[in-house]
Amino acid sequence: AVRRSASKDAMPLAAKDAASAHSSVLDPKYHGATNKSRTDAADLTVSSIDTSKEMIIRGRVYDVSDFIKRHPGGSIIKLSLGSDATDAYNNFHIRSKKADKMLRALPSRPVADGFARDALSADFEALRAQLEAEGYFEPNLWHVAYRVAEVVAMYWAGIRLIWAGYWFLGAIVAGIAQGRCGWLQHEGGHYSLTGNIKLDRHMQMIIYGLGCGMSGCYWRNQHNKHHATPQKLGADPDLQTMPLVAFHGLIGAKARGAGKSWLAWQAPLFFGGGI
Image (cartoon, rainbow, N blue to C red; front, side, top):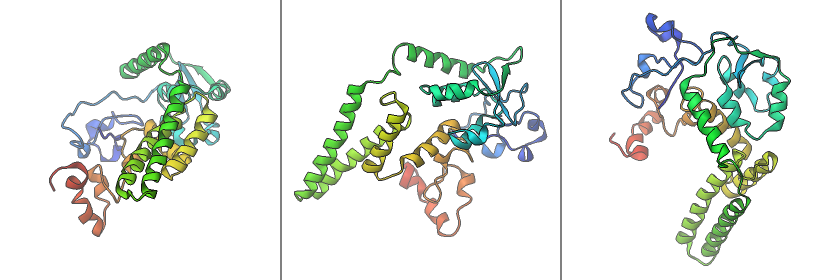
């Protein structure tokens, strides 16, 4: 579902008190974006910490005011200010000893008495811990070698077919190889191929650069922001798809000139619906 933090200026008076940095109380203008449910999730803003410079990670409150500009991942860290960032930290830095060392160097204090994680985050953390204990996060180097060999072989076959004059068939095989290449670099971008962050990063850049003709660095920057704020208007770059397609009326309203006529056809062209 497409979600967006509420804007205090646009909200009815009764809802203003509930709005905050990590609130999911929606202005009525966002209702119906993806479904008719009006069930609001819990406000994830932690009132006992300074929302301008603090966040909670693994049961401690960290002051990141002097670290934000030095954060190796860039400004994405700002999206977790004022909240329990344990999920984000665990998922982005699951194999990084360097991140853990940096975290220990930051000013911190225990969380206030009475603090409790929201139920959904606690459930996901329990699931992650279970999967980790069962070995699902352990890399399989033979599988990685097979996946790389598969892509190379498919590209080789596609080029050979094109070279032999079977243009259409060769293009199909090469196109499938490019799709497989995209998923392979996706795993490398998440550092889940070999378990070695540096090696996975370089593999991802090579696979995406040669196999898809695109920048691995740019992909990681955009995709990390997507995972930090999934489906959040104004924050998730995967929703910033103008002028090709608009995933929300508020985004489509920004279209000008011929762009409006193009978006009028997005339902049948992209989603199989009526105009």
